Amino acid sequence: MEPILLVEDNDSLRDVLVTVLEREGFSVVAVPTAEDAMHAFQAQGFSCVLADFKLPRMNGIDLAKRIRESAPHLPFLIMTAYGSIDVAVEAMKSGANDFITKPFEPSTLAPIIRQVMQHHRIVDRSCSSRKKSKHGLITESPRFEKLLEQARRVAIVDTPVLILGESGSGKEVMARYIHDHSKRHDKPFLAVNCGAIPAELLESEFFGHEAGSFTGATQSRVGIFELASYGTVFLDEVGEMPPHLQVKLLRVLQEHEIRKVGGSKTIKVNPRIIAATNRSMQDAITTGLMREDFYYRIAVVTLALPPLRDRKEDIPHLVDGLVHHYAAIAGKEVPQIDPLAQDILETYSWPGNVRELENVLERAVLLTEGVIKPEHLGIQICLNISALEEATRTLSEVTSAAVKQAEGEAIARALSLTDGNKSRAAELLGVSYKTLLIKVKDYNLGGGEAE
Image (cartoon, rainbow, N blue to C red):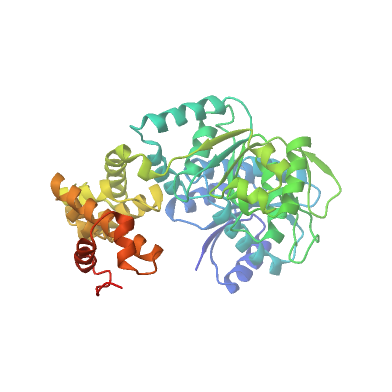
């Protein structure tokens, strides 16, 4: 059961909301004041906070600010009286995720809470995953350090940036790095995976919607472009965005204004846009999946992240940082790494890049009792036996093998050109007929007497 903290000073309404939410499967802790809410919040964890705006002494906005100090990403909803939308928007800029206007039907509350919690999971990552992913920026690679230097230069202006790279290579980490080094570093950073949200809902995520604008839109909602108007919007997997939405986003980037779904009012916005994709943009443009004008608007500056296999010198530092990180989370002593396990970590190709390395080491730290061994890594290593044999040959052996291979291919080609006539093939090759017969037999190319 998802635990919810309900803060409402009206006793009768509070009792009704508790009954409705518990019937919907939530576990509810209900309190009448913000001060009581802080005591409850410090005593246990919650999946969501639902608070009235008008509370005695400390109001809902002040409560949101207090809770955000220790739980910056916990879903927080404000209940506010009809007609005070400006207050609600201000509350959201202060830390609330969404708002509900009074009066409302209690039966509509549970779907809204579930929607906000799901929206939170899609739009943002947990604080722990953010801390973990920062390890991806540890580098000894001159190429990657040059990329970080470029990112720092780009960060000081609001120019749109497109980050290219394979899955797991750290595109969102780089986007946050740019945000953290920008003048907007203390403003919201909102990440949206354009491939994880159905196309019909993506427009609402971006621009917000008015109540009744589509089925299920029971309340007005502020979109991320308005919420992050002074911050940064990260469009992950932007290559998955439908072309018709690219047109609308292009207008936002050019005019710096939006209109909610189902709304008529124009709202001025000015977020910094950073986009990322693992697609080939040229292929996407050629096939019509990416509008050329939209591409050029979001790719004013392009940063291409190298895969982990191209920055092998960083692996020892990444491993050390991640092992310490996961040991701290698990409350364990930092384990040693067996030399063979270290060799595997440094020579493996890492098709899943830094994300795969994180997953492997998180698993290894949990499984080990003190020393990380190869079996704790869970990596399937396929040895290339022929390559190993090749590596152990002497120079004369390598030369001899190369000569034999070339000779066999030349004889096969001559026999093909002469339709298998060995006499003519011998003439083409400049060898005697007897020599050709011997070599045909040696190379198993089909023996026999002369034609």
